[in-house]
Image 1: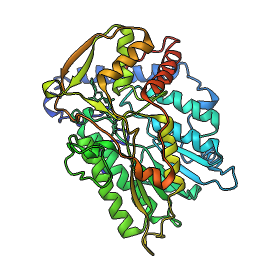
Image 2: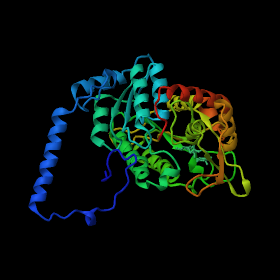
Image 3: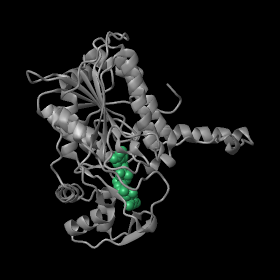
Image 4: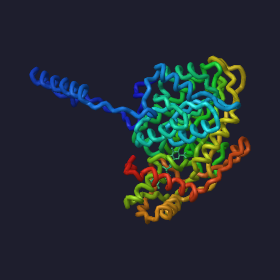
Length: 422
Ligand SMILES: O=C(O)[C@H]1O[C@H](OP(=O)(O)OP(=O)(O)OC[C@H]2O[C@@H](n3ccc(=O)[nH]c3=O)[C@H](O)[C@@H]2O)[C@H](O)[C@@H](O)[C@@H]1O
């Protein structure tokens, strides 16, 4: 679809290296150089000890017979009313939890993830291992890979797609804008293109974000509020996703449900998020930057615990109606929805830090600083009545209890000397 690589992660567009090319003054130097390269390659080829991956994490060549068998087996429905779900971003934080929950109740689940290095890929591999143990196979690939997506639909007639693959994080969008366009816009369009051509078309539930409310000041945020003043490119790409969803629903009859997640946290979380790296840095005795708005204004988030989000995702999936189109043609109006999935009780970031201090029994070195103008908004607060009325969404975990579970996981996960660096 474009020229960016299929796994952007930390990839950034490079400036042309033309002006830095070495000049070869003599053909002798050239010969010596290539002989060196050749010998080096031979050395690597013959003397490298082959690393034997554990059977559970063996990588399968996409499209091979063994791979196809694993795809089929992972997606096999094991309960009477089960559905078959393709979960994109399955090695991600929310993707792992949702995949495990679907599998537990007997649905067929196949994961897809590009394992990019936006944050520590070993954490993604550990989540993959966790899912493997529950019988969920994650295909390694990118949502921009049309052939791969088509192949997966050829093997399995997915009834649903839970699309959670994305370039996340609000601040990183200033460093690497291309990765947001690549995953959240081009990747999403690619996935919808493939879904719209299927017969039957799957119903799609996908991750939008609370950040679409941008600079709005009226709280709590309702789905009916304006979403035309995003504060980050990340938010703008999620908002674009919502408009793109409208288009595919309108033209092709795809059933589409967008979920606006509000700062999701919990065990197996994302190391780029504040609660995660605050924990790491408090334990290290490193100072943590705590943002505050103008005139000492409070910065707050409607932090939402992962188990509540998972219940919301499953509720949305279970109430998703069938797509109405087939093979690229719409036959009638289809469902188009967007829901807030938040906690409805915002907590100031300074309070988040106090809770962590109590749980970790370590005093944080607080570095209070002005909210930088790099994508953050001052507060978020969800009105969840729509999700409540449609599928009984009701968050149960407050920040104190949720962080307790996160800290327990964190201490346990990093107890064996693993590094918690991003
Ligand atoms: O709910 C959402 O829509 C978004 O939630 C998070 O974004 P954010 O709420 O900014 O989460 P964090 O980066 O963990 O920040 C949490 C709070 O800590 C503050 N913060 C962050 C970083 C820091 O160094 N200091 C600091 O005080 C932020 O201003 C924010 O109020 C996720 O990173 C997004 O992917 C997601 O879409």
